[in-house]
Amino acid sequence: MALLRLRRRRSQQQALSPDAQRFALGVRTVADLVAPGAFDDQRDHIRLEYQHARTLVIHAYPRSVNAGWLDPLINFKAPLDIGLHLQPLETGEAVKLLTHKMVEMRSSQMLAERGGRLADNDQETAYRDAETLRERLQRGEEKVFSVSLYVQVRARSQDELDELTTRLEDDISGMRALSRVAMWEQAAGFRSCMPEALDELLVHRNVDTTSVATMFPFSSLSLSMENGVLYGIAKATSMPVILDPFDRGFENANLAIFAKSGAGKSYFCKLMALRNLYVGIDFVIIDPEDEYRRLGAAAGDDGQYFRLSSSSGQHLNPFDLPPPETADAEYRDPLAEQVSDVLRLLDVMLADPGQSLTVQERAELDRAAYETYAGAGITADPATHGRPAPLLRDFAGVLAGLSGEVAAELSSRLRRYVDGSLAGLFSGPTNVSLDKRFVVFNIQGLEEELKPLGIHLITSFIWNQVRRQRKPRMLILDEAWKLMQFPEGGAFVASLARRARKYYLGLVTITQDVSDFLNSDHGRTVLTNASMKLLLKQDSTTIEPVVRAFQLSDTDRQKLQAAAQGSGLLYVRNTHFELDIVASQDEHALATSAPQELYGAPGHNGDQSVAASRGGSQ
Figure: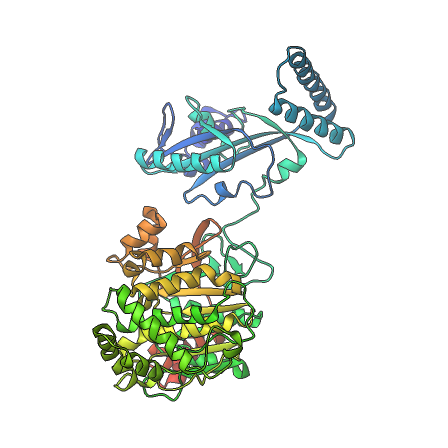
Protein backbone atom coordinates (compact mmCIF):
# COMPACT_ATOMS: atom_id res chain seq x y z
CA MET A 1 0.00 0.00 0.00
CA ALA A 2 2.84 2.35 0.89
CA LEU A 3 4.60 1.41 -2.31
CA LEU A 4 1.49 2.17 -4.36
CA ARG A 5 1.31 5.61 -2.78
CA LEU A 6 5.00 6.06 -3.53
CA ARG A 7 4.35 5.41 -7.20
CA ARG A 8 1.54 7.97 -7.22
CA ARG A 9 3.66 10.58 -5.45
CA ARG A 10 6.39 10.21 -8.00
CA SER A 11 3.93 10.76 -10.84
CA GLN A 12 2.68 13.95 -9.17
CA GLN A 13 6.04 15.48 -8.38
CA GLN A 14 5.88 17.71 -11.39
CA ALA A 15 3.00 19.23 -13.26
CA LEU A 16 2.59 17.05 -16.34
CA SER A 17 0.23 17.18 -19.25
CA PRO A 18 -2.52 14.55 -19.31
CA ASP A 19 -0.69 12.53 -21.96
CA ALA A 20 2.57 12.69 -20.01
CA GLN A 21 0.81 11.58 -16.84
CA ARG A 22 -0.83 8.66 -18.65
CA PHE A 23 2.55 7.71 -20.09
CA ALA A 24 4.17 7.86 -16.61
CA LEU A 25 1.50 5.51 -15.21
CA GLY A 26 2.40 2.98 -17.88
CA VAL A 27 6.07 2.84 -16.91
CA ARG A 28 6.98 -0.06 -14.56
CA THR A 29 8.91 0.99 -11.47
CA VAL A 30 10.54 -0.87 -8.59
CA ALA A 31 7.37 -0.27 -6.57
CA ASP A 32 5.35 -2.10 -9.22
CA LEU A 33 7.68 -5.08 -9.00
CA VAL A 34 7.61 -5.53 -5.23
CA ALA A 35 4.13 -4.30 -4.25
CA PRO A 36 1.60 -7.07 -3.46
CA GLY A 37 -1.19 -7.62 -5.93
CA ALA A 38 -3.78 -7.81 -3.12
CA PHE A 39 -3.92 -6.42 0.42
CA ASP A 40 -6.66 -7.52 2.85
CA ASP A 41 -6.59 -5.77 6.24
CA GLN A 42 -8.15 -7.94 8.99
CA ARG A 43 -8.59 -7.44 12.72
CA ASP A 44 -5.42 -9.27 13.81
CA HIS A 45 -3.58 -9.98 10.55
CA ILE A 46 -3.31 -8.98 6.92
CA ARG A 47 -3.36 -11.06 3.78
CA LEU A 48 -0.86 -10.38 1.02
CA GLU A 49 -1.83 -12.39 -2.04
CA TYR A 50 -0.83 -15.93 -0.93
CA GLN A 51 0.66 -14.96 2.43
CA HIS A 52 -0.73 -14.14 5.86
CA ALA A 53 1.17 -11.68 8.07
CA ARG A 54 0.78 -10.51 11.66
CA THR A 55 2.57 -7.70 13.49
CA LEU A 56 3.41 -7.89 17.19
CA VAL A 57 4.36 -4.88 19.30
CA ILE A 58 7.04 -5.17 22.01
CA HIS A 59 5.58 -2.86 24.65
CA ALA A 60 7.55 -3.82 27.79
CA TYR A 61 11.27 -4.50 28.09
CA PRO A 62 13.37 -6.30 30.74
CA ARG A 63 14.97 -4.09 33.37
CA SER A 64 18.50 -5.25 32.50
CA VAL A 65 19.81 -6.90 29.33
CA ASN A 66 23.05 -8.24 27.90
CA ALA A 67 24.49 -7.71 24.45
CA GLY A 68 22.61 -9.73 21.86
CA TRP A 69 19.46 -10.12 23.92
CA LEU A 70 17.42 -9.99 20.69
CA ASP A 71 19.12 -13.17 19.42
CA PRO A 72 15.93 -15.27 19.87
CA LEU A 73 14.20 -12.99 17.35
CA ILE A 74 17.11 -12.93 14.92
CA ASN A 75 17.52 -16.72 15.14
CA PHE A 76 13.80 -17.51 14.99
CA LYS A 77 13.15 -20.53 12.78
CA ALA A 78 10.80 -18.73 10.42
CA PRO A 79 10.94 -15.53 8.33
CA LEU A 80 10.52 -12.40 10.44
CA ASP A 81 10.43 -8.70 9.59
CA ILE A 82 11.81 -6.71 12.52
CA GLY A 83 11.19 -2.97 12.66
CA LEU A 84 13.51 -1.13 15.07
CA HIS A 85 12.89 2.65 15.15
CA LEU A 86 15.33 4.91 17.01
CA GLN A 87 14.83 8.63 17.59
CA PRO A 88 17.42 10.62 19.64
CA LEU A 89 15.92 12.94 22.25
CA GLU A 90 17.23 16.23 23.56
CA THR A 91 19.20 15.62 26.77
CA GLY A 92 18.05 18.76 28.62
CA GLU A 93 14.38 17.94 28.18
CA ALA A 94 15.01 14.34 29.23
CA VAL A 95 16.69 15.51 32.47
CA LYS A 96 13.72 17.77 33.27
CA LEU A 97 11.24 14.95 32.68
CA LEU A 98 13.29 12.52 34.77
CA THR A 99 13.49 15.04 37.61
CA HIS A 100 9.73 15.56 37.51
CA LYS A 101 9.17 11.76 37.47
CA MET A 102 11.51 11.31 40.44
CA VAL A 103 9.56 13.96 42.41
CA GLU A 104 6.33 12.06 41.72
CA MET A 105 7.81 8.74 42.83
CA ARG A 106 9.36 10.30 45.94
CA SER A 107 6.02 11.86 46.87
CA SER A 108 4.31 8.50 46.54
CA GLN A 109 6.94 6.93 48.81
CA MET A 110 6.44 9.61 51.48
CA LEU A 111 2.66 9.19 51.38
CA ALA A 112 3.10 5.44 51.80
CA GLU A 113 5.38 5.96 54.80
CA ARG A 114 2.89 8.34 56.48
CA GLY A 115 0.10 5.87 55.92
CA GLY A 116 2.12 3.08 57.54
CA ARG A 117 2.26 1.05 54.36
CA LEU A 118 5.26 -1.04 53.37
CA ALA A 119 7.56 0.36 50.74
CA ASP A 120 6.94 -0.69 47.14
CA ASN A 121 10.12 -2.46 45.99
CA ASP A 122 9.34 -1.92 42.32
CA GLN A 123 8.87 1.80 42.86
CA GLU A 124 12.11 2.08 44.82
CA THR A 125 13.98 0.25 42.05
CA ALA A 126 12.48 2.57 39.43
CA TYR A 127 13.52 5.60 41.50
CA ARG A 128 17.13 4.40 41.77
CA ASP A 129 17.26 3.66 38.02
CA ALA A 130 15.91 7.13 37.17
CA GLU A 131 18.39 8.76 39.54
CA THR A 132 21.32 6.88 38.02
CA LEU A 133 20.23 7.72 34.48
CA ARG A 134 19.79 11.40 35.31
CA GLU A 135 23.30 11.62 36.76
CA ARG A 136 24.81 9.96 33.69
CA LEU A 137 22.87 12.26 31.39
CA GLN A 138 24.06 15.35 33.29
CA ARG A 139 27.68 14.16 33.02
CA GLY A 140 27.27 13.55 29.28
CA GLU A 141 27.98 9.81 29.59
CA GLU A 142 24.63 8.79 28.11
CA LYS A 143 21.99 10.02 25.73
CA VAL A 144 18.30 9.13 25.55
CA PHE A 145 16.55 7.52 22.61
CA SER A 146 12.92 6.87 21.85
CA VAL A 147 12.73 3.23 20.73
CA SER A 148 9.95 1.32 18.98
CA LEU A 149 10.27 -2.40 18.26
CA TYR A 150 7.83 -4.33 16.07
CA VAL A 151 7.99 -7.91 14.79
CA GLN A 152 6.06 -9.23 11.79
CA VAL A 153 5.70 -12.95 11.12
CA ARG A 154 4.48 -14.46 7.87
CA ALA A 155 2.98 -17.84 6.96
CA ARG A 156 1.23 -19.62 4.11
CA SER A 157 -1.99 -20.29 6.01
CA GLN A 158 -3.98 -18.95 8.95
CA ASP A 159 -3.27 -22.06 11.07
CA GLU A 160 0.44 -21.85 10.42
CA LEU A 161 0.38 -18.13 11.26
CA ASP A 162 -1.30 -18.85 14.62
CA GLU A 163 1.26 -21.55 15.41
CA LEU A 164 4.21 -19.29 14.55
CA THR A 165 2.66 -16.45 16.58
CA THR A 166 2.46 -18.70 19.66
CA ARG A 167 6.09 -19.75 19.25
CA LEU A 168 7.16 -16.14 18.75
CA GLU A 169 5.27 -14.97 21.85
CA ASP A 170 6.93 -17.76 23.87
CA ASP A 171 10.36 -16.65 22.68
CA ILE A 172 9.60 -13.03 23.54
CA SER A 173 8.43 -14.06 27.01
CA GLY A 174 11.70 -15.99 27.39
CA MET A 175 13.51 -12.70 26.73
CA ARG A 176 11.59 -11.24 29.73
CA ALA A 177 9.76 -8.85 27.43
CA LEU A 178 6.04 -8.42 26.78
CA SER A 179 4.28 -8.29 23.44
CA ARG A 180 0.80 -7.86 22.04
CA VAL A 181 -0.83 -8.24 18.65
CA ALA A 182 -1.51 -4.87 17.00
CA MET A 183 -5.31 -5.21 16.96
CA TRP A 184 -7.02 -3.19 14.20
CA GLU A 185 -3.62 -1.71 13.39
CA GLN A 186 -2.17 -4.42 11.18
CA ALA A 187 -1.88 -2.17 8.12
CA ALA A 188 0.03 0.40 10.18
CA GLY A 189 2.16 -2.42 11.62
CA PHE A 190 2.92 -3.73 8.13
CA ARG A 191 4.13 -0.30 7.02
CA SER A 192 6.13 0.14 10.26
CA CYS A 193 8.10 -3.04 9.49
CA MET A 194 8.93 -2.01 5.93
CA PRO A 195 12.30 -0.38 5.10
CA GLU A 196 10.80 3.11 4.81
CA ALA A 197 11.68 4.44 8.30
CA LEU A 198 7.97 5.02 9.03
CA ASP A 199 6.67 4.40 12.54
CA GLU A 200 2.89 4.46 12.32
CA LEU A 201 2.16 2.46 15.49
CA LEU A 202 3.96 4.95 17.76
CA VAL A 203 4.54 2.58 20.71
CA HIS A 204 7.62 4.20 22.23
CA ARG A 205 9.98 3.36 25.06
CA ASN A 206 12.76 5.65 26.34
CA VAL A 207 16.16 3.96 26.72
CA ASP A 208 19.74 5.09 27.15
CA THR A 209 22.68 4.67 24.78
CA THR A 210 24.03 1.54 26.49
CA SER A 211 20.68 -0.22 26.20
CA VAL A 212 20.28 0.79 22.56
CA ALA A 213 23.68 -0.71 21.76
CA THR A 214 22.49 -4.14 22.93
CA MET A 215 19.61 -4.08 20.43
CA PHE A 216 21.61 -3.91 17.24
CA PRO A 217 21.32 -7.22 15.33
CA PHE A 218 25.00 -7.97 14.86
CA SER A 219 24.76 -11.59 16.03
CA SER A 220 24.17 -14.66 13.90
CA LEU A 221 23.28 -18.33 14.10
CA SER A 222 26.91 -19.38 14.18
CA LEU A 223 29.14 -19.90 17.20
CA SER A 224 32.76 -18.91 17.56
CA MET A 225 34.84 -19.85 20.61
CA GLU A 226 38.31 -18.51 21.24
CA ASN A 227 40.04 -21.90 21.64
CA GLY A 228 37.80 -23.97 19.36
CA VAL A 229 38.21 -25.57 15.95
CA LEU A 230 36.06 -25.51 12.83
CA TYR A 231 33.08 -27.88 13.07
CA GLY A 232 31.35 -26.65 9.91
CA ILE A 233 29.57 -23.75 8.26
CA ALA A 234 26.21 -22.40 9.43
CA LYS A 235 24.01 -22.75 6.36
CA ALA A 236 21.79 -19.75 7.06
CA THR A 237 24.63 -17.24 7.48
CA SER A 238 27.63 -18.93 5.80
CA MET A 239 29.54 -18.21 9.03
CA PRO A 240 32.07 -20.68 10.49
CA VAL A 241 31.06 -22.68 13.56
CA ILE A 242 34.09 -22.82 15.84
CA LEU A 243 33.61 -24.90 18.99
CA ASP A 244 35.69 -26.00 21.94
CA PRO A 245 34.09 -29.12 23.51
CA PHE A 246 35.76 -28.35 26.86
CA ASP A 247 34.64 -24.72 26.96
CA ARG A 248 33.28 -23.67 30.34
CA GLY A 249 30.04 -22.65 28.68
CA PHE A 250 29.24 -26.32 28.12
CA GLU A 251 27.89 -28.57 30.86
CA ASN A 252 30.08 -31.37 29.52
CA ALA A 253 32.08 -32.31 26.42
CA ASN A 254 29.72 -35.11 25.30
CA LEU A 255 28.40 -35.31 21.76
CA ALA A 256 25.61 -37.56 20.42
CA ILE A 257 25.39 -38.18 16.65
CA PHE A 258 22.36 -39.74 14.93
CA ALA A 259 22.39 -40.51 11.22
CA LYS A 260 21.65 -43.18 8.67
CA SER A 261 24.45 -45.10 7.00
CA GLY A 262 26.39 -42.97 4.53
CA ALA A 263 25.17 -39.62 5.89
CA GLY A 264 28.66 -38.49 6.90
CA LYS A 265 28.83 -39.21 10.64
CA SER A 266 32.24 -40.95 10.53
CA TYR A 267 33.49 -38.28 8.12
CA PHE A 268 32.53 -35.59 10.64
CA CYS A 269 34.19 -37.44 13.53
CA LYS A 270 37.44 -37.82 11.59
CA LEU A 271 37.56 -34.10 10.84
CA MET A 272 36.70 -33.25 14.44
CA ALA A 273 39.44 -35.55 15.73
CA LEU A 274 42.09 -34.24 13.34
CA ARG A 275 41.38 -30.61 14.17
CA ASN A 276 41.06 -31.02 17.94
CA LEU A 277 44.27 -33.05 18.02
CA TYR A 278 46.15 -29.92 16.95
CA VAL A 279 44.83 -27.92 19.92
CA GLY A 280 45.86 -30.45 22.56
CA ILE A 281 42.86 -32.81 22.89
CA ASP A 282 43.66 -36.54 22.87
CA PHE A 283 41.42 -39.11 21.19
CA VAL A 284 40.57 -42.75 21.79
CA ILE A 285 38.46 -44.32 19.05
CA ILE A 286 36.56 -47.61 18.94
CA ASP A 287 36.55 -48.35 15.21
CA PRO A 288 34.11 -51.08 14.05
CA GLU A 289 34.85 -50.76 10.31
CA ASP A 290 38.61 -50.03 10.16
CA GLU A 291 37.94 -46.45 9.00
CA TYR A 292 40.43 -44.63 11.23
CA ARG A 293 43.65 -46.50 10.37
CA ARG A 294 44.80 -43.77 7.94
CA LEU A 295 44.16 -41.08 10.54
CA GLY A 296 46.31 -42.98 13.04
CA ALA A 297 49.09 -43.21 10.47
CA ALA A 298 48.76 -39.48 9.67
CA ALA A 299 49.20 -38.69 13.39
CA GLY A 300 52.75 -40.07 13.13
CA ASP A 301 54.47 -40.64 16.46
CA ASP A 302 51.30 -39.53 18.27
CA GLY A 303 49.26 -42.35 16.71
CA GLN A 304 48.67 -45.82 18.11
CA TYR A 305 46.72 -48.62 16.43
CA PHE A 306 45.39 -51.84 17.95
CA ARG A 307 43.53 -54.63 16.21
CA LEU A 308 41.45 -56.77 18.54
CA SER A 309 40.10 -60.11 17.37
CA SER A 310 39.78 -63.65 18.64
CA SER A 311 43.03 -64.53 16.81
CA SER A 312 45.11 -61.39 17.37
CA GLY A 313 48.03 -61.15 19.75
CA GLN A 314 46.68 -58.05 21.48
CA HIS A 315 44.62 -58.59 24.61
CA LEU A 316 42.68 -56.69 27.27
CA ASN A 317 42.26 -58.33 30.65
CA PRO A 318 38.89 -57.47 32.23
CA PHE A 319 40.32 -58.23 35.70
CA ASP A 320 42.88 -55.40 35.59
CA LEU A 321 42.53 -53.07 38.57
CA PRO A 322 42.90 -49.29 38.28
CA PRO A 323 46.54 -48.21 38.62
CA PRO A 324 47.64 -48.15 42.28
CA GLU A 325 48.61 -44.47 42.05
CA THR A 326 45.05 -43.49 41.16
CA ALA A 327 43.83 -40.99 43.78
CA ASP A 328 40.06 -40.73 43.58
CA ALA A 329 37.87 -40.06 46.59
CA GLU A 330 34.84 -41.27 44.64
CA TYR A 331 36.25 -44.81 44.54
CA ARG A 332 37.44 -45.76 48.02
CA ASP A 333 37.30 -49.49 47.25
CA PRO A 334 38.88 -50.08 43.80
CA LEU A 335 38.47 -53.86 44.12
CA ALA A 336 34.71 -53.63 44.67
CA GLU A 337 34.44 -51.18 41.77
CA GLN A 338 36.35 -53.53 39.45
CA VAL A 339 34.28 -56.53 40.52
CA SER A 340 31.19 -54.55 39.65
CA ASP A 341 32.63 -53.78 36.19
CA VAL A 342 33.49 -57.46 35.68
CA LEU A 343 29.92 -58.42 36.56
CA ARG A 344 28.60 -55.97 33.97
CA LEU A 345 30.81 -57.58 31.34
CA LEU A 346 29.74 -61.08 32.40
CA ASP A 347 26.12 -59.97 32.18
CA VAL A 348 26.71 -59.05 28.51
CA MET A 349 28.57 -62.33 27.92
CA LEU A 350 26.27 -64.77 29.68
CA ALA A 351 22.75 -63.31 29.76
CA ASP A 352 20.20 -63.96 27.04
CA PRO A 353 19.74 -61.06 24.57
CA GLY A 354 17.57 -58.34 26.09
CA GLN A 355 17.73 -59.98 29.53
CA SER A 356 19.85 -59.59 32.64
CA LEU A 357 21.31 -62.20 34.93
CA THR A 358 19.20 -63.23 37.90
CA VAL A 359 20.04 -62.16 41.44
CA GLN A 360 21.26 -65.68 42.28
CA GLU A 361 23.46 -65.83 39.18
CA ARG A 362 25.03 -62.48 40.01
CA ALA A 363 25.64 -63.62 43.57
CA GLU A 364 27.51 -66.72 42.35
CA LEU A 365 29.60 -64.66 39.92
CA ASP A 366 30.36 -62.05 42.60
CA ARG A 367 31.54 -64.78 44.96
CA ALA A 368 33.70 -66.35 42.26
CA ALA A 369 35.25 -62.98 41.33
CA TYR A 370 36.37 -62.24 44.89
CA GLU A 371 37.80 -65.75 45.27
CA THR A 372 39.66 -65.34 41.97
CA TYR A 373 41.28 -62.11 43.17
CA ALA A 374 42.10 -63.72 46.50
CA GLY A 375 43.79 -66.59 44.66
CA ALA A 376 46.05 -64.01 42.99
CA GLY A 377 46.87 -62.46 46.37
CA ILE A 378 44.68 -59.38 45.80
CA THR A 379 42.42 -58.22 48.61
CA ALA A 380 40.74 -54.96 49.66
CA ASP A 381 44.15 -53.80 50.95
CA PRO A 382 45.46 -51.26 48.36
CA ALA A 383 48.99 -52.56 48.97
CA THR A 384 48.05 -55.77 47.12
CA HIS A 385 46.60 -54.06 44.05
CA GLY A 386 49.95 -53.85 42.27
CA ARG A 387 50.19 -57.63 41.96
CA PRO A 388 49.51 -59.32 38.58
CA ALA A 389 45.79 -59.52 37.95
CA PRO A 390 44.11 -62.91 37.39
CA LEU A 391 42.79 -63.90 33.97
CA LEU A 392 39.40 -65.04 32.76
CA ARG A 393 40.57 -68.67 32.74
CA ASP A 394 41.44 -68.34 36.44
CA PHE A 395 37.95 -67.05 37.10
CA ALA A 396 36.45 -69.91 35.06
CA GLY A 397 38.41 -72.43 37.15
CA VAL A 398 37.10 -70.92 40.40
CA LEU A 399 33.53 -70.85 39.06
CA ALA A 400 33.75 -74.48 37.98
CA GLY A 401 34.84 -75.44 41.50
CA LEU A 402 31.74 -73.92 43.12
CA SER A 403 28.95 -76.31 44.02
CA GLY A 404 25.37 -75.96 42.81
CA GLU A 405 23.43 -76.05 39.56
CA VAL A 406 23.59 -72.27 39.05
CA ALA A 407 27.39 -72.19 39.17
CA ALA A 408 27.58 -75.23 36.87
CA GLU A 409 25.26 -73.61 34.32
CA LEU A 410 27.24 -70.36 34.36
CA SER A 411 30.50 -72.25 34.00
CA SER A 412 29.11 -74.08 30.97
CA ARG A 413 28.13 -70.79 29.29
CA LEU A 414 31.51 -69.24 30.05
CA ARG A 415 33.55 -72.13 28.63
CA ARG A 416 33.37 -70.92 25.02
CA TYR A 417 35.08 -67.66 26.03
CA VAL A 418 37.88 -69.55 27.80
CA ASP A 419 38.58 -72.69 25.80
CA GLY A 420 36.33 -72.34 22.74
CA SER A 421 36.38 -70.41 19.48
CA LEU A 422 35.90 -67.04 21.21
CA ALA A 423 38.73 -67.41 23.69
CA GLY A 424 41.40 -65.38 21.90
CA LEU A 425 40.31 -61.96 23.12
CA PHE A 426 40.51 -62.92 26.81
CA SER A 427 43.36 -65.46 26.74
CA GLY A 428 46.20 -63.32 28.03
CA PRO A 429 47.15 -60.34 30.20
CA THR A 430 46.74 -56.81 28.90
CA ASN A 431 49.48 -55.92 26.43
CA VAL A 432 48.19 -52.58 25.11
CA SER A 433 48.46 -49.11 26.59
CA LEU A 434 47.21 -45.57 26.08
CA ASP A 435 50.57 -43.81 25.90
CA LYS A 436 49.84 -41.96 22.63
CA ARG A 437 47.58 -39.02 21.83
CA PHE A 438 45.58 -40.71 19.06
CA VAL A 439 44.63 -44.30 19.86
CA VAL A 440 42.50 -46.47 17.58
CA PHE A 441 40.98 -49.80 18.63
CA ASN A 442 39.94 -51.69 15.51
CA ILE A 443 37.25 -54.29 16.31
CA GLN A 444 36.36 -55.15 12.72
CA GLY A 445 37.91 -58.59 13.11
CA LEU A 446 35.76 -59.50 16.11
CA GLU A 447 32.90 -61.89 15.53
CA GLU A 448 29.52 -60.15 15.57
CA GLU A 449 28.59 -61.60 18.94
CA LEU A 450 31.93 -60.49 20.37
CA LYS A 451 31.66 -56.85 19.29
CA PRO A 452 29.47 -55.74 22.21
CA LEU A 453 31.93 -57.46 24.54
CA GLY A 454 34.87 -55.82 22.83
CA ILE A 455 33.27 -52.37 23.08
CA HIS A 456 32.48 -52.93 26.75
CA LEU A 457 35.97 -54.24 27.47
CA ILE A 458 37.68 -51.34 25.71
CA THR A 459 35.54 -48.65 27.35
CA SER A 460 36.10 -50.21 30.77
CA PHE A 461 39.85 -50.30 30.13
CA ILE A 462 39.82 -46.67 28.97
CA TRP A 463 37.77 -45.67 32.00
CA ASN A 464 40.45 -47.01 34.31
CA GLN A 465 43.12 -45.17 32.34
CA VAL A 466 41.42 -41.77 32.32
CA ARG A 467 41.04 -41.93 36.09
CA ARG A 468 44.80 -42.23 36.34
CA GLN A 469 45.73 -39.15 34.32
CA ARG A 470 43.25 -36.34 33.78
CA LYS A 471 43.77 -34.38 30.58
CA PRO A 472 41.42 -33.30 27.78
CA ARG A 473 40.46 -36.52 26.04
CA MET A 474 37.60 -37.61 23.78
CA LEU A 475 36.29 -41.17 23.45
CA ILE A 476 34.52 -41.89 20.15
CA LEU A 477 32.13 -44.81 20.57
CA ASP A 478 30.92 -45.85 17.12
CA GLU A 479 27.88 -48.14 16.76
CA ALA A 480 26.98 -47.44 20.38
CA TRP A 481 23.61 -49.16 19.93
CA LYS A 482 25.35 -52.57 19.83
CA LEU A 483 26.26 -52.16 23.48
CA MET A 484 23.08 -50.30 24.45
CA GLN A 485 20.93 -53.30 23.50
CA PHE A 486 22.20 -55.11 26.61
CA PRO A 487 20.81 -53.82 29.94
CA GLU A 488 24.17 -53.85 31.70
CA GLY A 489 25.99 -52.48 28.66
CA GLY A 490 23.50 -49.64 28.43
CA ALA A 491 23.88 -48.93 32.16
CA PHE A 492 27.65 -48.76 31.76
CA VAL A 493 27.53 -46.29 28.84
CA ALA A 494 24.91 -44.16 30.63
CA SER A 495 27.08 -44.07 33.74
CA LEU A 496 30.07 -43.10 31.61
CA ALA A 497 28.09 -40.26 30.02
CA ARG A 498 27.14 -38.90 33.44
CA ARG A 499 30.58 -39.12 35.03
CA ALA A 500 32.91 -38.37 32.11
CA ARG A 501 33.05 -34.61 32.69
CA LYS A 502 34.64 -35.12 36.13
CA TYR A 503 37.63 -36.79 34.49
CA TYR A 504 38.24 -34.36 31.61
CA LEU A 505 36.65 -36.84 29.20
CA GLY A 506 34.16 -36.22 26.43
CA LEU A 507 32.02 -39.11 25.18
CA VAL A 508 31.05 -39.15 21.49
CA THR A 509 28.31 -41.71 20.79
CA ILE A 510 27.46 -42.53 17.18
CA THR A 511 24.46 -44.59 16.18
CA GLN A 512 22.35 -45.27 13.13
CA ASP A 513 19.84 -47.50 14.92
CA VAL A 514 17.99 -44.56 16.45
CA SER A 515 14.92 -46.52 17.58
CA ASP A 516 16.86 -48.98 19.72
CA PHE A 517 18.89 -46.15 21.20
CA LEU A 518 16.09 -43.73 22.08
CA ASN A 519 13.58 -46.35 23.17
CA SER A 520 15.76 -47.33 26.13
CA ASP A 521 16.12 -45.41 29.38
CA HIS A 522 19.91 -45.64 29.16
CA GLY A 523 19.90 -44.27 25.62
CA ARG A 524 17.83 -41.29 26.69
CA THR A 525 20.24 -40.72 29.59
CA VAL A 526 23.16 -40.58 27.16
CA LEU A 527 21.24 -38.07 25.04
CA THR A 528 20.29 -35.92 28.04
CA ASN A 529 23.90 -35.76 29.16
CA ALA A 530 25.23 -34.59 25.79
CA SER A 531 25.79 -30.83 25.52
CA MET A 532 26.01 -31.14 21.73
CA LYS A 533 23.83 -33.19 19.39
CA LEU A 534 24.28 -33.62 15.67
CA LEU A 535 21.47 -34.92 13.47
CA LEU A 536 22.42 -35.83 9.92
CA LYS A 537 20.25 -37.30 7.17
CA GLN A 538 17.46 -39.53 8.52
CA ASP A 539 15.51 -42.28 6.82
CA SER A 540 11.73 -41.95 6.66
CA THR A 541 11.35 -45.31 8.43
CA THR A 542 13.44 -44.25 11.47
CA ILE A 543 12.81 -40.53 11.80
CA GLU A 544 9.77 -40.73 14.12
CA PRO A 545 11.81 -41.39 17.32
CA VAL A 546 14.08 -38.47 16.37
CA VAL A 547 11.07 -36.17 15.85
CA ARG A 548 9.72 -37.08 19.30
CA ALA A 549 13.05 -36.87 21.11
CA PHE A 550 14.05 -33.50 19.63
CA GLN A 551 10.52 -32.10 19.15
CA LEU A 552 11.29 -31.32 15.53
CA SER A 553 9.08 -28.98 13.57
CA ASP A 554 7.73 -30.06 10.20
CA THR A 555 10.33 -27.86 8.54
CA ASP A 556 13.24 -29.46 10.44
CA ARG A 557 11.84 -32.89 9.74
CA GLN A 558 11.78 -32.20 6.01
CA LYS A 559 15.31 -30.80 6.17
CA LEU A 560 16.66 -33.96 7.77
CA GLN A 561 14.93 -36.26 5.31
CA ALA A 562 16.17 -34.26 2.33
CA ALA A 563 19.61 -33.39 3.76
CA ALA A 564 22.63 -33.83 1.54
CA GLN A 565 25.57 -35.91 2.66
CA GLY A 566 27.45 -33.96 5.32
CA SER A 567 24.59 -31.61 6.20
CA GLY A 568 22.31 -31.67 9.23
CA LEU A 569 21.16 -29.94 12.40
CA LEU A 570 23.54 -29.09 15.23
CA TYR A 571 22.00 -28.62 18.70
CA VAL A 572 24.14 -26.55 21.05
CA ARG A 573 23.46 -24.01 23.81
CA ASN A 574 19.66 -24.25 23.72
CA THR A 575 19.47 -23.56 20.01
CA HIS A 576 19.98 -25.42 16.76
CA PHE A 577 20.84 -24.54 13.20
CA GLU A 578 21.71 -26.13 9.90
CA LEU A 579 25.35 -27.14 9.58
CA ASP A 580 27.38 -27.99 6.49
CA ILE A 581 30.48 -30.12 7.15
CA VAL A 582 33.41 -28.90 5.06
CA ALA A 583 36.99 -30.06 4.68
CA SER A 584 40.20 -29.02 3.00
CA GLN A 585 41.60 -31.18 0.21
CA ASP A 586 44.12 -32.91 2.48
CA GLU A 587 41.54 -33.47 5.21
CA HIS A 588 39.10 -34.94 2.70
CA ALA A 589 41.71 -37.38 1.44
CA LEU A 590 42.18 -38.69 5.00
CA ALA A 591 38.52 -38.65 6.04
CA THR A 592 36.70 -40.03 3.02
CA SER A 593 35.58 -43.65 3.02
CA ALA A 594 34.00 -43.64 -0.45
CA PRO A 595 35.34 -46.72 -2.29
CA GLN A 596 35.33 -44.84 -5.60
CA GLU A 597 37.87 -42.42 -4.13
CA LEU A 598 39.90 -44.90 -2.13
CA TYR A 599 40.22 -47.62 -4.75
CA GLY A 600 39.31 -45.80 -7.96
CA ALA A 601 36.39 -46.12 -10.36
CA PRO A 602 36.52 -48.82 -13.06
CA GLY A 603 39.25 -47.98 -15.53
CA HIS A 604 41.09 -45.57 -13.17
CA ASN A 605 43.66 -46.09 -10.45
CA GLY A 606 42.84 -45.21 -6.85
CA ASP A 607 45.35 -42.39 -6.44
CA GLN A 608 43.90 -40.44 -9.34
CA SER A 609 40.39 -40.89 -7.98
CA VAL A 610 41.32 -39.55 -4.56
CA ALA A 611 43.11 -36.57 -6.06
CA ALA A 612 40.14 -35.73 -8.24
CA SER A 613 37.70 -35.73 -5.30
CA ARG A 614 39.60 -33.40 -3.01
CA GLY A 615 37.72 -30.31 -4.06
CA GLY A 616 34.48 -31.36 -2.35
CA SER A 617 33.54 -31.61 1.27
CA GLN A 618 32.24 -35.14 0.94
